[in-house]
Length: 62
Image (cartoon, rainbow, N blue to C red):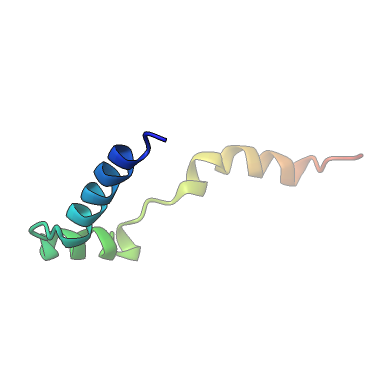
């Protein structure tokens, strides 16, 4: 008992969300989905190069 008002509020909110149509900035969406070009991506491995060169001289033994 007592769930009628709560259910009615939830139904109203769901209906409002279903038919709500916000203004969409398609150019911002395109920029976000496109990302950066591959030649602009920094080389993430370059900062670890000093460690990999050391391992080539002294391989790990397990």
